[in-house]
Length: 259
Image (cartoon, rainbow, N blue to C red; front, side, top):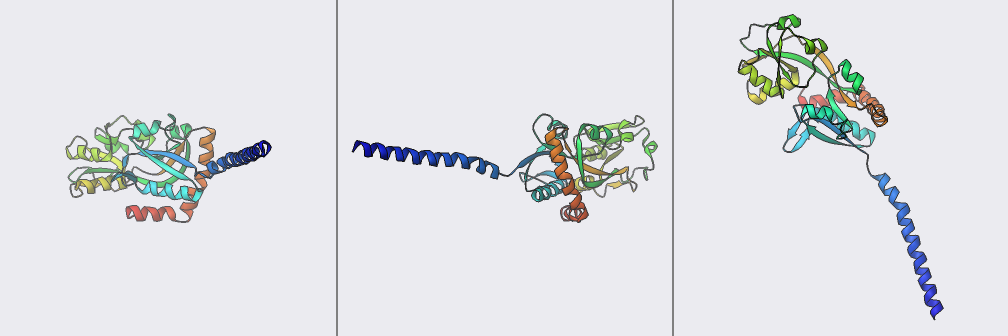
């Protein structure tokens, strides 16, 4: 009887060991099945491309990246941050990448730049009664106070110019408010961003956009110059290219912005 009990116990121990071993073997497979998630930082208030709305981070750039992620079979977690903080997020380990970067030589040296996500038209806005009729070159701005967003880059020549004053603000809406208060003579920014802010402030009849743009630029995703950053850069770039070729990115911009 004792032998049978011992044998039963041995069989039960063997069965338990086999089940436990199978569970251990199955665990890595379960872990591998979890979706890959990229954490992407972006400016918290950059409407209509990305901004907070009813507690959600939404916008055209997020729509583009979300579709790109779906095509790659991954997820993207978006982190809204003030722009100066967002610029530091990947190097501080807070994000895998950063989006809506303007192209500058320094940024192409510092980041693995992927894209473009889209293009943007950089324009000037003045009061409706301002004497400046149009922009022809940077000399037209001599002696003026020009509203800019702190941390933004416009063009290398504009950024480094010293013959006019760069009046910094935290966002385009604040720049427009300074224009209304005559604390700036002219402001510069992305056309869609400024028009969105104008509608929000209900001042479209009080200001006007100069016909000639400062520049038309792509907006890029940046990854750190690491092996992990290189791998993400190499995967995302071809997907964005296909979305441009297929007309998906223009379609998303029309749906979100009415362009």
